[in-house]
Length: 459
Image 1 (tube, helix red, strand yellow):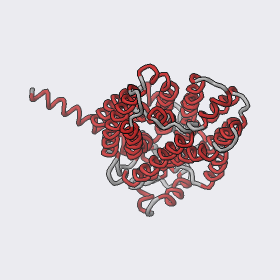
Image 2 (cartoon, rainbow, N blue to C red):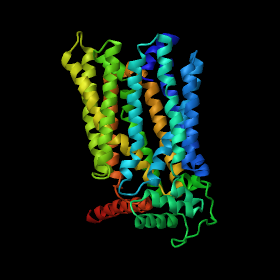
Image 3 (cartoon, one colour):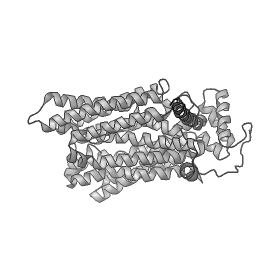
Image 4 (cartoon, rainbow, N blue to C red):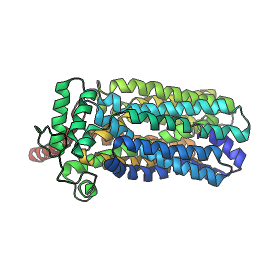
């Protein structure tokens, strides 16, 4: 969409406000989709929820590729957004639930890597299809997304269902067979299965093929345990998921990815060809460093990567804000400011991609208790999409109001707040079984409480 918007505005004769709405409406619809996906995945399973997401996105892509008018383009974008919400919620949950603790960071970050690869393909397609006629080029840029939707819908049917969801349904035999497929050893498979059975309220030593569950197994009553009457640990988990999803976009990544052509144009890059090539570079940088992050998550840990990442983003955003401010007030082109803006943009993408980007999805998908996971993650993703929508739909108005440099100084300030929140309230989860997360957050809360009491005693 970032490159297509250049041509859509010219072809359909729409204004900046309509461009903002077109860019951001996907995320509003994704918010609704993610909330629906949580309950859907509890009812039909994780695997078939991915199929549903693919079908919805396929329909949206076809409509966007056809789009003779702005209204139809918006309809297709809304439908695609609904599918995006489904996919963003279910992909990390599915990955986390089939992964072993030692490789969960790597495997659960793969959806984020896939997203980055998709963004890169989008940038490349913008460059390639920009050579076509005005009316045809942008339609192919958007419509070609139907192809991976079809591949995903059929490909996921060859993958196993989540053994954790199967246990919740009482289908222990299927869960055991799949657990042996996705574990490093038979002993690990049995240990993991016992922990899951315990979390689901089933006797650890039960080896029946099918068990009749006494409790509701399709996500009924989760809202009460998650929002209305949560335990202290669950409350901390929910707040952590909401916070990390909020700050992922509040720190400005959507402004950089979606509006990078405008940023480079403000910095002094003027031709369409150079603008699109510069955004391709952003996509390549993002995918390289997210790939690096996937191998660091299970070695370095989530917390260290998160703090390092946000610290680097603060510096890069401050430098970008300064460079763009100098360009804005200069009466002639400043080569050093142009260079600073480009370097800062790429540096920001590097630090985001090595930490906050992948850790957001890994961390939020692994911290919820088993029966609360799908709908808990859906709330986090809904916050993610809402924040994304607010940034993407208001960025043009924001930088017109406080200048583009001021906008990035604002993002830098929010990144400082994010670093403090992560430092004080986010415990490490590296290598810990999913069934232990509630206890980790309980211990973290107790240790902080003990520290406060100790400080009072000293006083």
